[in-house]
Amino acid sequence: MSSSEGTADGSTGAGAEFYHDFHSYVDAMLQKQDKAVLSVLVAVVVVVVVTLVFWKLLHRGKSSRRDVLLIGLCDSGKTLLFSRLLTGKYKWTQTSITDSSAAYQVKDDKGTSLTLVDLPGHESLRLQFLERFKTAARAIVFVVDSAAFQREVKDVAELLYQLLTDNVVLKNAPPLLIACNKQDVTMAKSAKLIQQQLEKELNTLRVTHSAAPTNLDGSGAAPQLGRKSKEFDFTQLPMKVEFLECSARDSKEENDANLSSLEKWLAKIA
Image 1: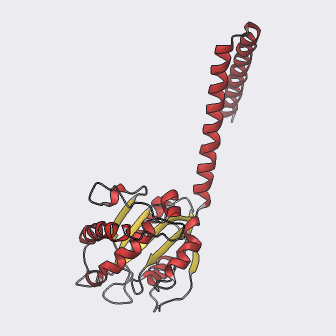
Image 2: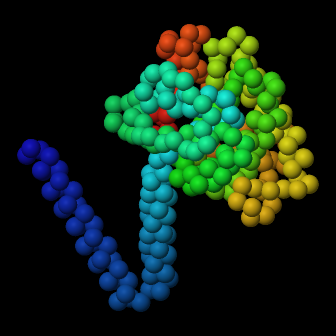
Image 3: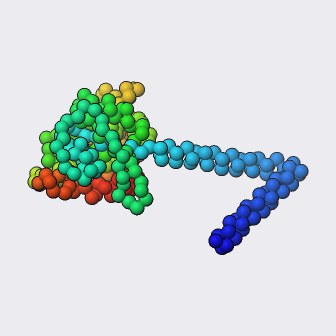
């Protein structure tokens, strides 16, 4: 105890001494009426204060966003992933017409928690619910049915395009995970192949959408996706995008799910 108290007293003394020296220096400059030096001092103080205020606001904004949104097409397995992460158990699910949210305890030693939000996958509802929750999103999990990807690639890419060109999502740049689900199915596509095909499809969508650009909030032309002069790839986006393979069910429903990579990612972004 005495050692820590001595350190604290020493730090306080050093701080007081610095303040006294700085104050004496400013007083001396005032007496000399050295305007150039005073201008520099004022500028330095202003820069430091503005930087601290900006950092505090930025940090507070990020820390206040605790929602992790699960979004994807119908039957992509979002709701079962949601249930598995929360309870560790398998249960039958059906297409929902509203959102579901619950506190999720991150698998770390800090006791951190997030709020998982499962958004409806139905085409007429998903953007409406995304609009409601996107501002509070700390991260987004975009769930893909790896087994049905080949026939759904255009619909998957269209939804992803709408997400990636939304002004709020671009501004906040929450980490984005493309969760390639249903890897327990024999014909499931790999995360690498899904990434390559999505980049190709999104590159095509940039051209087709340029004729009549829109975004989620209807505020005019949607932002450019990626770099205009280059073939699109996910590294061009302001947020970090990662791909991983997972499965909310094994080949037998009662078996454990393969969600360890997803759980590690949630711990990382928490």
